[in-house]
Length: 261
Ligand code: DAK
Image 1 (cartoon, rainbow, N blue to C red):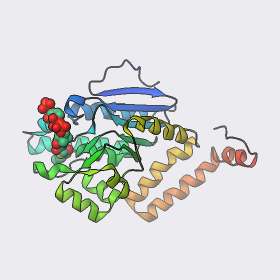
Image 2: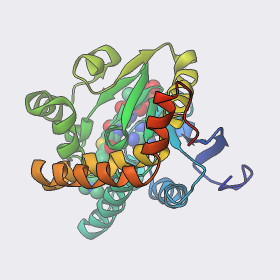
Image 3: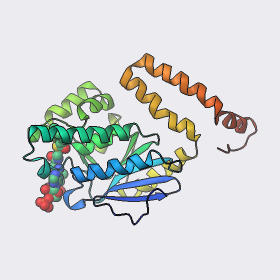
Image 4: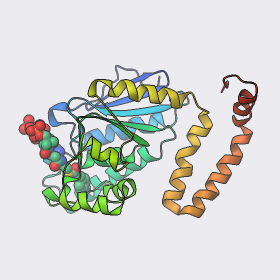
């Protein structure tokens, strides 16, 4: 247990069960709008989790009818250019942290996933959504563009023209459209979403732990440094697994038993 469950967070709820950490955005009266304090709490918590040997999967979800309805407009209003730059830098650092966590991060999107909330979702390893989830990049409605990496990650997630369409029009789309574009990997009735997320988290937690931890650096190496570098990183990580759990995984297969990681 990295945190006592009674530890006080203002905007997050944290629980840890069966090697699965669940972080709930808990500011429902403002539809979990992302303010500096929430981003700072999330950053501190993820920085602890990434060093944990016991936590194998992280789930992010929201309390109430939103996952996150965007950056906090009331807080952003009136920022100077340099304050906006600081806010953007903080947001980018948190999104990069989510994307590079050694543990897979599952986004369980329970409702509105807008603007900065969509950017959090886009940083997760993959996404499950309730059938009531609604998505948009509404920044241009406010005279803004995404400030936490959304312009880059949305293109990668749903393709160039889909991303341009939704960035230019700020149109809202539903879970079925998100699924059709490959943004989310499953749609579930709202009351089943968290059970499904936990079931998938447990499945991942049963796999080779070092192999699971190797996937984010391998995938992200190619995304940030190009195909060849990604393949080079894959070769190194693949080979290094032969010094750790891969022998046990292959022995278990050949002996027709479950691996003992
Ligand atoms: N910020 C602050 N408060 C918000 C909020 C938000 N993003 N979204 C909702 N709320 C608050 C509402 O003001 C309301 O507060 P009270 O009036 O009760 O005090 C409460 O949450 C409930 O909202 P509604 O009454 O509006 O609820 P409805 O069900 O009627 O409508 C809605 C739900 C999601 C359709 C609506 O709330 C809505 O349109 N919300 C705003 C969505 C939005 O535009 N989000 C912002 C996206 S832009 C950057 C950094 C970051 C960003 C950009 C640049 N740089 C540093 C450069 C990111 C920008 C964004 O995320």
